[in-house]
Length: 186
Image (cartoon, rainbow, N blue to C red; front, side, top):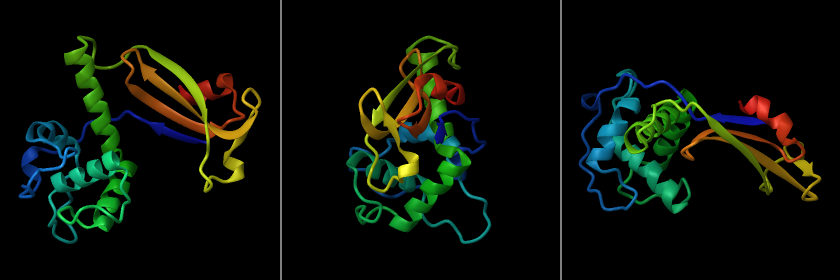
């Protein structure tokens, strides 16, 4: 069972803490200056310990967005991005420490407040589940038999707010019923 919580607390980083970028923006996935101003406070700028930072975090974020949008492999980004190992390293670190979650949470709160005219924090949620095929690399213990669909798969249980924005994802074997998947999801 895997739980992916899409919530968090904002980081205390300012735009001035990040290295400026000189990379030209020519991919559709690149962050604009306005987008970077919104997400930069939630992207860790570094600890000033260890090796000096040579790649701006803006470029790392652009590389992650490029890989996500194009479905490209981690080891095959265009040459104007930072090295693939570095990009993957930051993706792992930011996922583990909650930076990507904080960015998602902050953007969701802005949509609630400004676009929808609602409170920043959602007060209601909608939960649902779907059986999905598991990749060949998913072990048999991670799968389950969905008696309704008569297939051996995985199941994701999701919670969305009333605007349709994602709050939480819970991944289980397909044999887990909705009534049993809802309590850990909530």
